[in-house]
Length: 176
Image (cartoon, rainbow, N blue to C red; front, side, top):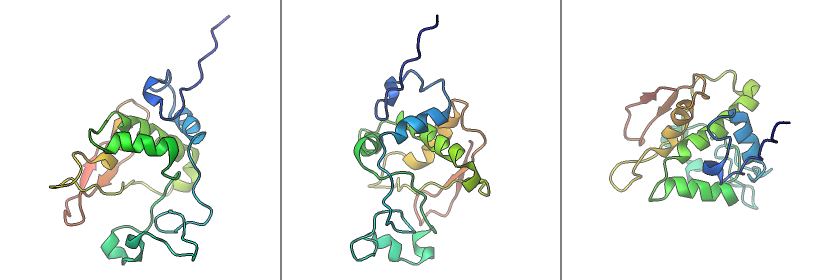
């Protein structure tokens, strides 16, 4: 009789998970979903943050014209809290741990695959830009997520285009 498969390690413990390099992205998203805080029912249509009590968004960027903020909306999959916030902080805050790139990529791909009908009309994913100039982040963490997951053969054919900063008009296509 075969040994039972171990349970996934749980989001936040992904680097130690028995499935992180071998199983489909859907498993990573399903596991992460167990600990992610769902988006607020009353949230901003532009940035997905919870609305203030008066129904307004507290994000000042949402009041800018579209040509100033460089996006029409943000598609969030969970609130930045709990295990997700700790993982994001481990990934973004110095010393950065770029190994989280492929873990976030797998969670994102699992989400996209699970909502394929919603995203079937899109051929391009544009991550929120990361300022990497003087005083900015050491690496472009948002643009690293999808290509990193694809390096493990589970990303399909996604294309990522990222702008490092609004003043930097050079787009950069990353294989995916």
